Length: 209
Figure: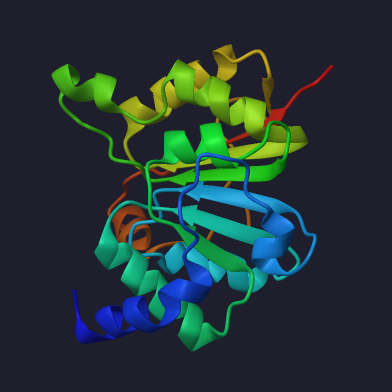
């Protein structure tokens, strides 16, 4: 971690990092307002997370990430960009969803570029699996959106299969979705697209029909 990240961790954690607790979180108290809430799983170094929060000021965002350097980097961005609609939880995402997030409460969930675990023997470690998707769907409010993105085609195909099989979710399009305006193009992604690599977005909506 750089000194800037360490400084941000020390100075900003009390305000922007929410401690894990095994009971529902009072989000209105955490943000000081009532607003639609979007949860992101695994924000990495937080560049896209900060950009999305900046262009959607009327929405509150919670980023869940276990790696400390990423938490420090996002805290630094929060300070630099004056973002008041973003909070962080440094804890396992499944436990956060199970205990801190109430059913049918989220306006959206973002899962961008999770580890693809390329080797076939490691595929079972992938984040997007039926049990997690069922949990995510249960936490979305009616018409809430689950947005996943990956640059690994076999993972995109698995995501499409798993999401399509979840009864509470409905695809917003046929197959893969165009990249929504709010999801910024990462440097890595832009470089990959120039080289002819694909990126696949999947946007599913909670379906209570």
